[in-house]
Image (cartoon, rainbow, N blue to C red; front, side, top):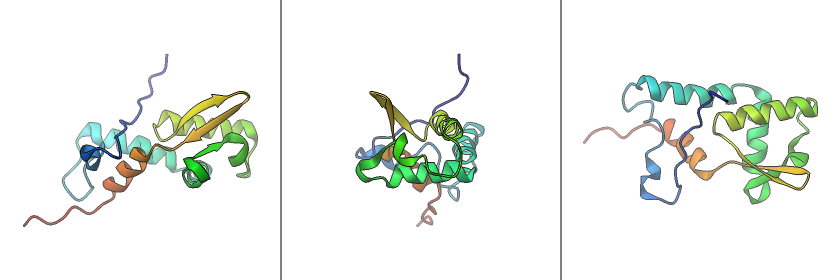
Length: 125
């Protein structure tokens, strides 16, 4: 049994998609839960290999990438698998097995949530 938490996903097309898991950093101080969620996400992306893998998946044609297409990041295949697992555990990637290959994708809602987190909140009128 795993004790990892997955980031909540948002429907990028829904009106509520503008409200990510956490408010913009400049809006107000984070609650303990919001800080844990954001820290989990940033910790997963804090490794250069993981960031390269995440970028490779996010920028791949069609919005998904076969592990066979993104493994050239300068580390062994078992290490690639380890890093992809960490990105999945943080809720940043989803995967689907098709035959012998695994395909990874970044949900658009994850990118939207990350963008909103780092957005400067508008000043009150």
